[in-house]
Each structure stands twice: as structure tokens, then as C-alpha cells.
Image 1 (cartoon, one colour):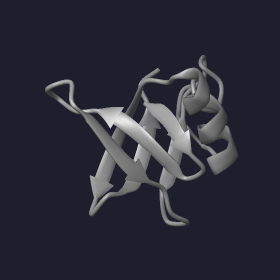
Image 2 (image 1 turned 90 degrees about the vertical axis):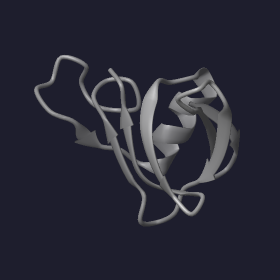
Image 3 (image 1 turned 180 degrees about the horizontal axis):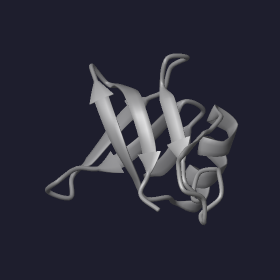
Length: 78
């Protein structure tokens, strides 16, 4: 997953193609050490948009569920 602009990101699809998407106030963001949270933790932690943006600017591996161009859920692949 990569950062493009505030609230706009890209993710690689199953065939390696890049897909741009936006986040919204309803987007759930969960981390287990890469976006936020403790990598040694037993469960994912709810993250903020700011934590997502910082992680995406560095490059982060994440599973993104998208509906109509807007992410509904983002979970880091830690």
C-alpha cells in the first residue's frame, strides 16, 4: 500500500495492478504492528488516519476492502 495524497492511497491488486482508493470517516483501520499497535500483540488495534498515512508513506503491506472506490476496512498484513 502506498500514499498518494491526504485520504488517497494505492494498493496492488491480485494481478499486480495498482488500484487507487480513498478513505472516509467510516473506514475501519486495524494494525498489528505495521500501521499501529504492538507487533507482538495477540490482536489488532484500531488505528487513526494519521497513523495510516505515516505507515503508507513508508510503504506498508495491508489488506484493503474497497467498495465504490472507498476503503471500508484496512488491515495490516503483519
